[in-house]
Length: 362
Image 1 (tube, rainbow, N blue to C red):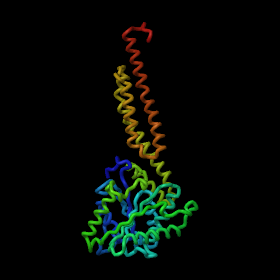
Image 2 (image 1 turned 30 degrees about the horizontal axis):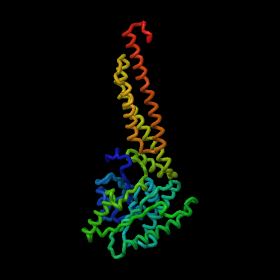
Image 3 (image 1 turned 45 degrees about the horizontal axis):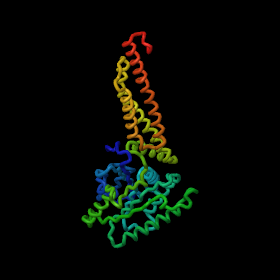
């Protein structure tokens, strides 16, 4: 996807919702992705599991999550729980795609979906203070007869009720869903019956995801998972592996493991480049030559190596980065020492050669 150099300048979004509500169609229109969409003549499920694509318009990774209430899965909610855990661990924004006609119903897929998301969130973030996720409700086939504010109030009341009824660990007994989630709401007109209105609303919605100067910009810093782009694949694979084993997810520990893995790789690459860059000078000194302005060269080479390490590693876990940087700096000092000692020896030999064996410096 060409995002390895983005560091933290990228975003991750996932979409949830019932089957056959146009989740993939929404993502393709919003982000320029190419997820498979349903063949209306067959009415078959197209998205199974979690699919990831990159927006054609910005550095945004987009996850198309299998629809809830699928007949193909029956009563098996394992996939839903796993998908919710994975999405919450990796995505800053969860788009909840829902039909206007389902708002206010006291049963059905939307209730189950929100309950699954909340329960997954309690497993993940009970110890992660200040970590929030944005729930972005996209209300499909919105006819504008009911004020959007009324829908917002109903959905917020529903979420309050689900959160209060959910089983919680002791430390979250007095918590509210708003401690962990922010919410935004938007209504989209019917894509088939009023296509022009749909396209206008879609264009306005698109700007909220890509225009950082917008007052309604979606990707706020408080939602970031702080995973540099170069490490996202390794991090996501590790998270999914733990989920499949049904083990407890400890996100801080995974972030530290990721930092150790990535910083160690960057350390090795930086050290290798450093050794290559000083190789010619080492050969000159080994041959008995005196290298002009060696001190300046050593300072610049050391500085360039550390700057290269910093540029790639500083976005990972702070304590791991600092520790690895200190180790790298000490290692580079050790590798520079033979240059200094060799230069001194060559200078002494040069003086002896000029003044003869009686020279007091011999």
